[in-house]
Length: 307
Image (spheres, rainbow, N blue to C red):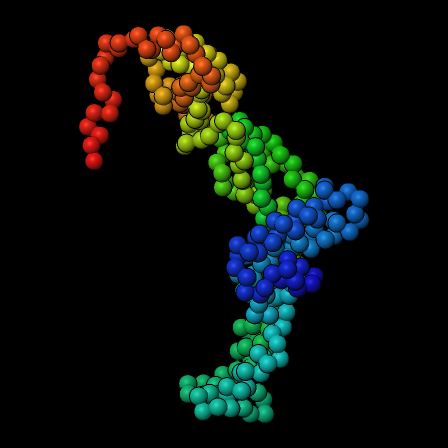
C-alpha cells in the first residue's frame, strides 16, 4: 500500500480530526455503491479505508511514523541508521560500559560477561529486529448516519466494507447519538493466523423535523389555536410509534407541558410542549369581543418588572 498520508491527502502532523474528515470525504466520494460505473472505485475505496484504519489507531500510527511497520501494518527492520546506534553508543565515553571483541559486544561491570548481540537476539530477534509474529488485524471504523426514527424505534442496516462484504448492523431501539456499534471479527484480517479486527460503527443520528430527544423522553412542540388553549380540545398528536389522542385542558398556556406516558424510548415518555398560535389574519369578531371584554382576573402580568 502507498503512503497512507498521501492516500488521504493529509500532512504527516495532521491532527486526528483532520484525518477523520479527509477519510469521510474520500470514502463518500469513492464508495462502490455510489460509483457502480467506475471499475477502479472499489480498489480506491479499499485503499482509503486501509489508510484510515492505520492512521486512526494512535499506536499503529506512531509505529508507522517510527518505521517499525510499513503501510500494510507488517513489521519491518529498523533503518540502517537506527541499527547502527548501538555501536555508535558503544564507542563514546557515555557508552564505555560496552566494548567490542572478536566475538561481538560484551557488557562489562557485572560478575559475568554478557554477550550483547546474544542479548539483543533474544530480546528482539536476530540482528536486533523484533520477530514477526501473529498480529491482530486492524479495526475498520465507519460512520453510520441514522434517521431519528430508525434510532428511536430500532432497525437493521446493511454496511458495505472496504473488501466488498456486506454486513448487517442491528440498531437497538433507543440507540443514542455517538454510540459505537462493534461487530467482532469483521475488520481487516490478522497477520500469521492472528484474529481479524472488529468493525466499529459510530452512530450519528440525523435531526427530525419536529421530534427531539432529552434522555429517554421524546419532546414535541405542538401548535394549538387560541380557541383550543382557552376552551380546551381533544387533538391528534404524532408519536414515534404512531398518532394518539391528547386532551388539552381549558385555559392552557404557551409552554405548558403535557406527558404521554410510555411513549418515549426505553421506558421514557413523550412530552408535548404547547405552543399557542394567534390568528394569522384579522378576526373582527374576536377583536370586537376583546374591546368590550373586562377580565375577572385584573392582575397586571408585568407587575414588578422595574429595573
